[in-house]
Amino acid sequence: MKLYQSPSPNARRVHIFMAEKGIDCERINIDIRSGENISAPYLAKNPGGGVPMLELDDGTCIGESVAICRYLEGIHPEPNLLGSTALSSAQIEMWQRRAEQKFFFEVAGAFRNITGFFKDRETCVKEWGQVCAKKATASLAMFEKQLASHSYLAGDTFSIADITLVAALDFAKQIKVVEIPKLDHIERWYGEVNERPSMSAT
Ligand SMILES: N[C@@H](CCC(=O)N[C@@H](CS)C(=O)NCC(=O)O)C(=O)O
Image (cartoon, rainbow, N blue to C red):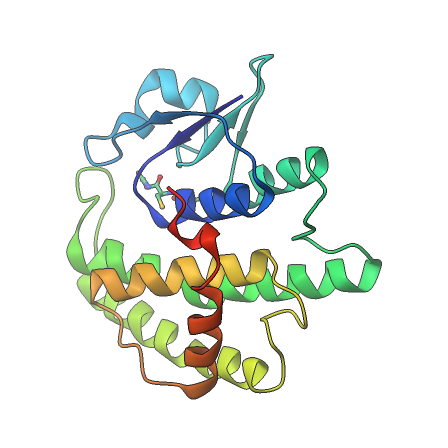
């Protein structure tokens, strides 16, 4: 199988997930800056146009980071990162989606609209980016509260929910358009999660 990737937070989620499971495969770099991800050959494989994408040996292509992770969990169940019981799967899904929708997507909206990074392919509205940035910052209070009483975002074990939040937080720190307040429980969790060898996976 081959992973189509770029230096980007969504690809990083899959890199971390694969490193946690000890999975490796061929990597193909896609230049999202020049729009290789919206070229006809790439769109033929992944109509969503996003990076990352996983191509299986039989040519089947899987887009969407969490869908890729779900496939990888299916073929490499251990260590479990998506939940092993009805309840743990639901809790991990719940926090993964909160991390993605309330923080990651808002950070991405701030980045795209404020910097105009993809202005060759979309309309950028700076004011909307500033609204997204504020929503991203505000959402951190929810994660702070959860991490005050749990080791990891979805409970006692490291999961894909932590991967999404850490990848989005690091991206937010890198792009510097979202205010990241100092929050004690997030900081404790961030320090612990960053000790995992998978965090440096590329
Ligand atoms: N929902 C997709 C999002 C993929 C995505 O938007 N990836 C970004 C990089 S982090 C990208 O390809 N951007 C290029 C573009 O929007 O043209 C996922 O979960 O993988």
